[in-house]
Amino acid sequence: MTEPNPSAPALRDCPEEQYRLLTENVKDFAIFLLDQDGKIATWNTGAERITGYQEAQAIGQPFALLFTPQDIVNGEPDKELSIAVEKGRSEDERWHVRKNGRQFWAMGVVTPLWDEGGRLRGYAKIMRDITDRKRAETDLAEANRRKDDFLAMLAHELRNPLAPILNGLQILRLEQAVSPGGQTAIGIIDRQAKHLTRLVDDLLDVSRITTGKVSLRRERVELRTAVNHAVETVRPLADARKHGLSVSLPTEAIWLEADLARLTQVLANLLNNAAKYTEPGGGIWLSAEREGSDVVIRVRDTGIGILPEMLHRIFDSFVQGDRSIDRAQGGLGVGLTLAKTLVEMHGGRIEAQSPGVGKGSEFVVRLPVVPEVKPLEAEAVETRQAARISPLRLLIVDDNQDTVESLAMLMRLNGHDVATADTGPAALEVVFADERDVVMLDIGLPSINGYEVARRIRAHAANPVLIAMTGYGQPEDRQKSKEAGFDYHLTKPVDPKRLQDLLSKIGERVHFGRTD
Ligand code: ADP
Image (cartoon, rainbow, N blue to C red; front, top):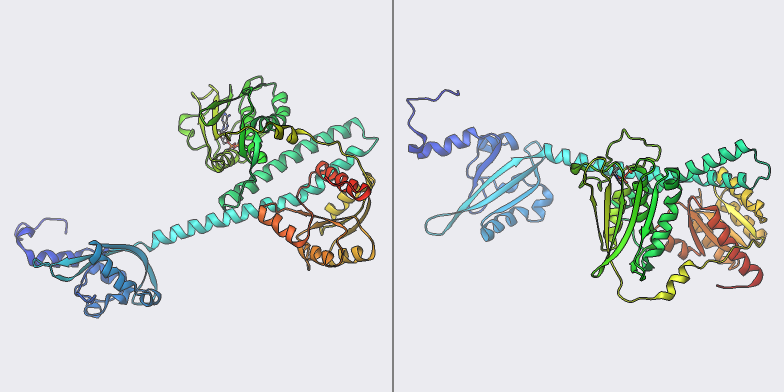
């Protein structure tokens, strides 16, 4: 078949044969003509193969024959023809129907056919069956969605056991007679539990980012505050690795319209990476300077550097450089993804620079600066009152026994009177039988959930302060708990120190009627 036939006339001299050979031989594409009214006029081998209709079955039929019932109801076949007339062509991808009723995904082009007199004579349609590609894309998107769901669920579930671990640790710290070996063990558990909390938080954040659920709580923030908080977080690691860490900021205040926690997270991520990816005894510099209406923050290190081909990829999720290096401080490869998304949500840009492997790296963050200066707010952010403990009558409600027990122990050690409950109805019984100052409620309770418990308490009593303790901390979750009657919303794992500060604030109000 591949041998040329020397006795056959050249194809260019046989106009009738040209079209016949084309229709008979092209098998990958359906190529057919339609009359002016959309009825099938010619049919090639490819059309037979793709649709399952023989030539005799197809000729004279409306080409709507190949459309899904829904597309026919929506008038899609007619639309295709009128768009072709209007615009010179109509191109689309959609599900079509084979003779046996099964669907196939095809891309198609319809071209109007005009004769020399400018009259519309019909249409040519070329279609290609790309069902396999479509299925592969759909499977990939589905697998990706399932991966995101799994990560979100995993991060969420991993948070629950962290709360009792951190509480238990706090209890051990309050024990008087802990042996030196015990102290070392407490230190280890503390560091590892905090590391685990950071990883879980990153995982949760990245899955929120991929589902577009991260929002900023913006306020006027002085850059110095965010830098100080970030440096505080990374200082222990930098000291442990004997790095020199220097910070240089402009003397004048730089005000940003930013979410302080998220901005701190970005800077802490960059500093933390600088400390991780630099051999012990290295140097790390954070500097900031005004450039027009922006501030440019640079985090530079003398570390292992970044390969040129990696520079643009390191901001993608789960992308990591050399995985063989010491991963004692390892992350999940999402820190820079978070940093980039958060910087962009603040209207800024981030980029990485490195002269090469072993030559250090520099991350440059550019953020817009707020023009006017409000110096008084800076001090307001920094001033904090030392907490005093005023005993309270607490009710802790959670269906996780370890969480309830460890939190109850911790609260008793802090001098509070504690009752516990593991279901919504049990909680309501305690509240209605016994006056409680504060109810600390898990939201995800079986039978009636925390929102409903809060609603029922509020329907009868305005007194107890209601604190939601939940793994969900997005603005819409906070709004929901506010609507149910909660006064405060804490996300798990609840930081025992934060809880103590909150309870002493509530204690002052309950006992001394202070409001602040
Ligand atoms: P992780 O640190 O958890 O791996 P990141 O998203 O923070 O994830 O960083 C992604 C990758 O970028 C790292 O695995 C590392 O290879 C590279 N990287 C980040 N910061 C630096 C740095 N300061 N020096 C060298 N490489 C870095």
